[in-house]
Amino acid sequence: MRKVSIIGTGMMRFMKRDTVNMVDFAWPVVRSAILEAGVDPKSIGAAYCGSAASGSMPGQRVLKRLGLTGIPISNVEGACSSSAIALRHAALAVATGECDIALAFGVDQLNLAGKTLVHRTEDWDFANGLAMPGLYAMRAQRYMHDYGVTIEQLTKIAVKSKKYGALNPWAHFQQEVTPEQVMNARMVADPFTVLHCCPRSDGASAVVVCASDIAHRFSSKPVQIVASIQRSGKMMTGFRDMTMPESTQRAARELYEQSGLGPEDIDICEVHDAFTVNELLYSDALGFSKPGEAVQLLEDGDFDIGGRIPLNISGGLVSRGHPIGPTGIAQIVEMTYQLQGRGDKRQVEGAKLAMTHVTGGGVAGLDHGAVTIHILGV
Amino acid sequence: MLDYEPLALSAGPYLDLQCDGGPRLMGSECLECGHRLFPVAAVCPNCMSDQLKPLPLSREGKVYSFTVLRQAPPGFDSPSIISYVDLREGVRVFTHLDMLPHQAKCDMVVHLKVVDPKIDKFGRKVLQFKFAPIGGAQ
Image (cartoon, rainbow over all chains, first blue to last red; front, top):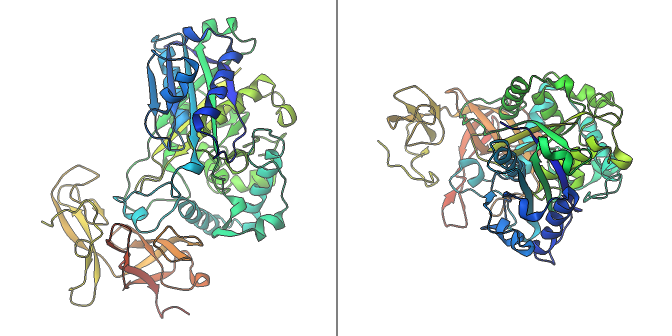
């Protein structure tokens, strides 16, 4: 298979955008990725759109504005993993020789979608009153119980997230907060106040990828997709360890094996922090820490700029926002900035290998419906 | 064999109210591979066999984890204490806890309690049971 590189990025500030049609805010993002890549739009051989709450054919609805039609347009749904999966498929189309240049983007307008994201009547748990904040709150409760983590420590994650969100012009929340503000905010699901939770955002994100051997024609600093994996959670009905997300752990192990890399090789990472505790859960699952020891990395500043593995320096889902469909590619765009030295005030010096990790969905019996992990490098 | 309901929420398949010794939950056990699950299922998610038998479940269990949902989904009381409760048979049940928020703890022992059901937006009875602490809410 051919190697694949990212040559163009498009991003916008994630926020509440419920007064315009999503097509109208999405096409400029896609266009900016194509312009940054500098490719002839007619040379794009395939397009993949990741979306979870935008109905049928959002890809065609956005791309027709740009006349990017006639090519295969595939709409990919995988909850929060949607656009990460879209990117994976775009990269596979190039890797297998189906085309030389492909587009992947994500779009959703969550604030015009239904109030409850997950309402699956065939799922016992969700039919009986489970909600995503509740699911992660239960993971947090057990993690705190098993490893002695305190609410003050989880609060530090929220403070860190807002601190870096304040440095990111694309972030939904760009204001720092104090621990007191986090602790005294409205309680959502114990131990989470609203400042531990990602907001409902609207937005779009896009990347253009091409075969690595032609990437230098378009970009002075292309970013290679070093490794990519997509898995689903395993159906389990017994006593699952909710402090160790099995799909992430399994996918990460396979990805490291495939790529010959290990967690110690990764310089910077974006994980799926829909809620604060996720940074601990996923640090453990991705192998940055041993089970239960992520909180020590947090306390030692290892998740900050200058630390061992800067985590969610974009502000993550908690601060950058979480429009679901576009979230995976927003992580990819952020890591591309970092590897190209375009991180501005949040630049991590010398980053060579970056990881993005996004899970997806509430399906009772699976820890997650989907998990997608990418390693990018320069 | 039990009739399969795609949505096993109506009384009967998962809650046996007529049992001697009090109500109990019903799960399934696979006759091919021994896999156990709750609620009742028509096919085994471990080996795909459709040969399953009803599995009466213990009335007592242990709270694996819980949270207090301050804004429960539509149709449920706010706050709701939601929980995963582990039963001796090796199955985990998503349920609500019938106690005060400060009482809820990981690993506490709880027992099955039939409650007045909620009616969901499709007109079906849901949440006909909770788990309560030994000695009740206090």
